[in-house]
Image 1 (tube, helix red, strand yellow):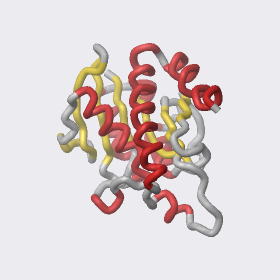
Image 2: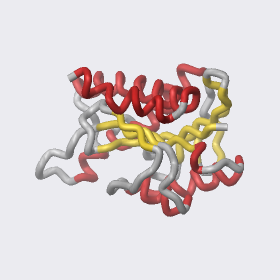
Image 3: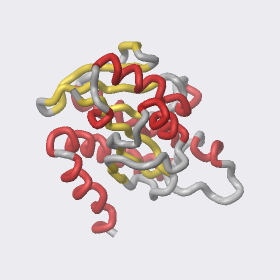
Image 4: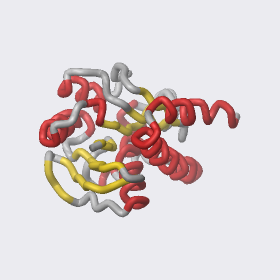
Length: 192
């Protein structure tokens, strides 16, 4: 079974912020595949379902971003799955808004949610989909930027990105991460 986890912060206060793009992508997958993600367990909202013939568990940790690893460790332990079956979706300020980047492993790159996951899993080797939210403007605190909301124009672009990231997750579990990386990691470059 694949576990697809979108990172974000719980409570309405953080809804639709840059830091919650992982939640938005998981919500998009739940909508497309009619998966109910309201079950509360492992300090997360979870929902089991089937995507293109593959069993999946959609997860939205409710521990707040910086403690995401606590929830995901509990999920992996409960289902006895390896980190390689976990796909983590999250925001990345080093990518242009809406751009995707798929990786099979790597450092946290300064992202505290990923840093916590690495600490709790004891490995950097888990697949991830980074969703670009754009670089922080000068003289704005990073925390204020990632907890801020998108402009109307950016929101339209991001809605498209959520659908693309959902497609990327499906391609990763159906066709393999290499094919997904070849398709999505180069897509924006060829369009420009």
